[in-house]
Length: 93
Image (cartoon, rainbow, N blue to C red; front, side, top):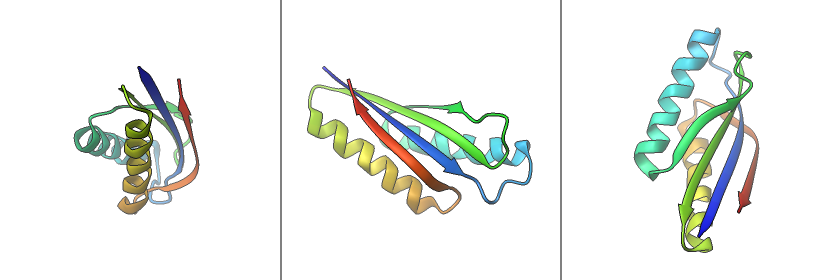
């Protein structure tokens, strides 16, 4: 069993308040969950209105599958245009 964890550090240029940030992040999290069938949560920077850290995890029996899905999540987030990925890290457990 392979557990993949992706950590995305995001900059939200469009957010002008915590309310804007929550709306943007909730929408992004819902789209990621629905498209990739992974677990997603905001895990850091919750008090800052233009930054966020989002954690994504998945379980599979194949390491290549985990890499492929998590790389697809990164590309998907980049293509949305609502947030900018400032850093990301992938771990396999």
